[in-house]
Every structure is written in C-alpha cells, then in structure tokens.
Image (cartoon, rainbow, N blue to C red; front, side, top):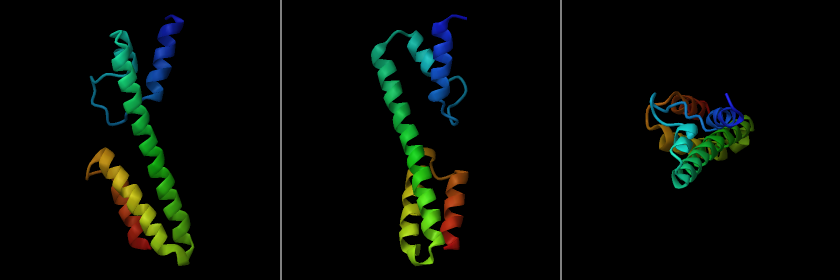
Length: 108
C-alpha cells in the first residue's frame, strides 16, 4: 500500500460518521472520483457535523457544571436545551443522547 492510500485511510478516520449507512461513501471514495468540488463539499459537510458534535459536548458539560451550582439552575437548563436542539438536528428524535440530556434536565 502506497503513502497516498495510507493517507486516505487516515482521512476517512477523521471524517467518520458513526450513523453512516454501510455502503455509503467516505472521503477516500469521493477522492477516487477525482472531482475536487465533491471532495470540497464532502469535507465542508463533515467538518460542520464535527463542529455540531463538539458544541453538543460543550453545552452539555456547561449544563452539568452550572447544575452543580444550585443557584445557576435556569442557566443550566438553557445550555441543556441548546445541546438537545443540536442533537435533534443531527440524529432526529430517537437517540440515546436525547434521553440522557432529558434525564439531566429532570434532575435539576
């Protein structure tokens, strides 16, 4: 296996989508089509999805932290609600993360 192929495998690991149906394309598949526009669009879409996932973690952790400070309950609920909205926009209504966030919100 050449250096170029090993590099593409590493790139696929960066742009992995755990909910991606089997048989759907990864970055190396798009790259092999030799269509720079498709590659660019694939990367932009993947980076936006990764950014949303990081925002979920940020808002959920902030909600957890503020929830521990009993005086900040309302602010904690707002951050949980923001994380919940992001999760729903990515995964839809049926996801374990949604259940977890709702449980955290109920505990407050």
